[in-house]
Amino acid sequence: MITKMVANLSVTKANGRATGWLSRWLEAPVTVGVSLLCVVVALSPTLTTWLECDWPSVMAGQPWRIVTGHLVHWNIEHLGWDLLVFAVLGTICERKGKLRFVVTLCAATLLIPVATLFLLPQLVSYRGLSGLDTAIFALLAATVIGESWQRREWHLLVLFSGLMAALAAKTGLELLTGATLFVDSTNAGFEPVPQAHIVGGLCGTVCSFQWPEAERSAKDHKAECYCPAEGRVGGGGGGICQDHVDL
Image 1 (cartoon, one colour):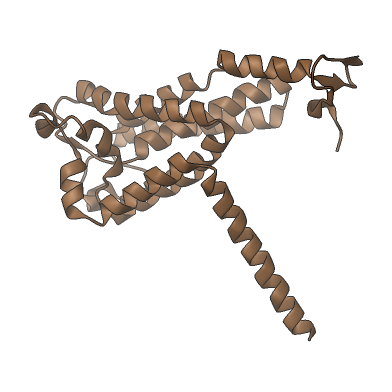
Image 2: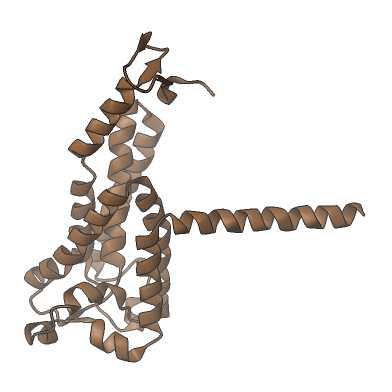
């Protein structure tokens, strides 16, 4: 009887965790949509051929390839690493700030291929999510760095500053060695393009800056709260300021 109850409890906990992950993903429809598109493209050689960022085809009148090239990958290993990073970081960033996340993706999606063509005119084709991965990594890290500075949360400031430094070191190593850190580019048959990661990182960092809408929202929140730490009552909502409540 006890064994059966323990087994049922374990199943319930497992179902709860699965439901939690599913609900988090459903709160990030852009991330889910892009991830599913990458999988569908990987399963279709025809789509792969029609969607990769092939510059001769772009110049011949197929501009959609500039955008869709991010969905195409060279092999399963390439897809697996890129998709894992995108799914995890994309979910976090999209739930944290959907508009900022979408703007970052749009900017990086357009700027990365154009910049790589300008920097590497000999480049014939471009594939992969890694540039977008770098963009949302930089977006998340730079956003947390800014927030932790304002809140004086030094442990987060040090941690995410270290992660940004690690990203810069990884990109620099790829530039120097001509090899990727996680994917075997030689086996996959492609040449790494760390310039795409540089452009993506710049897009994410720039888009992390606090927007006027966010500043107004923070001011409105502060004005509508009773703040015990400051001993005053704001107008409007009359709620308790959660930023100063010890739980």
